[in-house]
Length: 341
Image 1 (cartoon, rainbow, N blue to C red):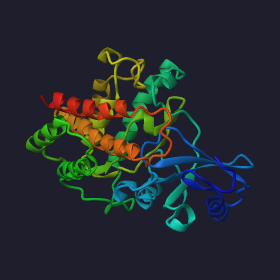
Image 2: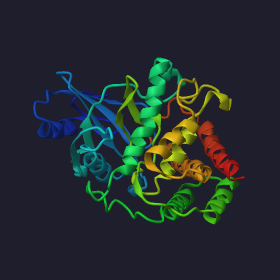
Image 3: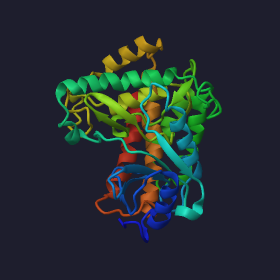
């Protein structure tokens, strides 16, 4: 990436460095920008000044995208609102909504050091006793997030609190239709069943929408920061639980050692459910519906990402096998349907 001059993919280094200098006291240009791996939606860059101070910049993906899914101001607002709550979120530094600076809005937050457990290979470096403690912290932080009063932190108007599942089904059906490149019958079949069997929502909460180890910075058996709040809204907290359980692969599942929890040492899904129920008093007897909904929703999201890669809106595709990504959408849709059957 360029160092304080010129334009690199997603960053106008000179203009952004000027903005950072005006908003961060003591910044020492030039600033180097490096894309942080793993961003399939909003792009995340590490900004490092000449004195070694590090910050993180988030911006929408390149090219034409669905604006509502990449609202930098909204994501910045959510993280800022949680800074004094018992939920570890990075401290925000500033929001730039002037597209003249970098071609798209962006916000900047503190850099939090630690590991991001994207897969089992990274998790191997975590001692086994820390894995169990981390799993406990993951479900405890989720319980605490769902206990935050949205009105008390200024997020009461983030979205409608009621009818979460109905709203989500409408949203992601619309997303699916807008980004569909081929037929996947399991998507339509699952959508129909989810509509027919929709449970009554009990209470509401701040819903992260993408709560998993791959969206956390961790260290010493604790979460240091929860990241990627772009899908956050208000609604049914059990959607977060179902999503987490799907990502929480156990060694006994026989799915190989790809997911970060698959190598063992973490609490089981049943343990997570018991701990969440004890902390919140919520009934998880219908959690398989929420797990199916989560797989279906991820399939819709994945299709959007697949199409952006297909049209070149996500930048360099080196190392990307688009056929594998395409197949993963169908796999998700079928997993949703299987849970409902």
